Length: 245
Image (cartoon, rainbow, N blue to C red; front, side, top):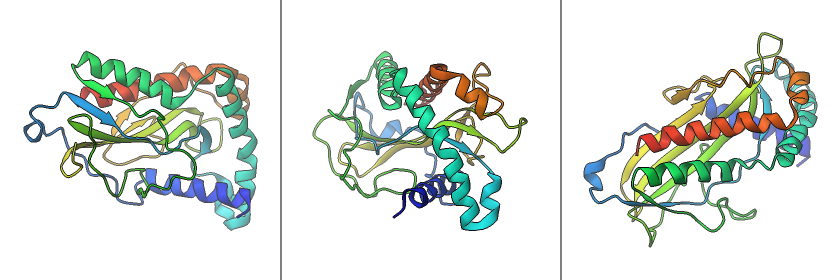
């Protein structure tokens, strides 16, 4: 499949899920009665994630496949530049999440058991839904429960074209806590930092106003500082998830 078309399909999948065009994981508060001895949590490997740049309601999408491909080609250098700046800043969203979340859960009295590799390796095809959650779970041998958690979107997003629609750090995650045997759901929710996608029925976090870029030129000029905005976003989501456990 041509790279441009593959990128377009990936963007469509992300938008379809985040805007609620497919069933969102149903919210469920922590059921402590089902796990009264919950003291340790095994975190499952996440699906791979990659920071990106996106314009919601991109005008190019209004002109069929050709227009959409042109729009994606225009976004490609912006995405490449974001990833380069994040690399220079030594920012990794998964590592940032682990550091924040681990400390927060330890403060709440939990032991957190992490996989050796935080993300699944390329080539491993675990069956997941559009939100990244596993379609089937197996029992874990460590921990009182297992946490299936995944990034949906990481990067900078704008609600549309024009100066009135600036780019802001944007992160979405889903979290599902299951018993160690994988049979009973204990908790589930969706978290969105900068709800530019209008994701319905999610825990929404307003973005930090220090990291607002009116257009792609401003986003480019921000350089490695873009990593600071994303780190705050990831930490904010980690705090919201930890607070519910």
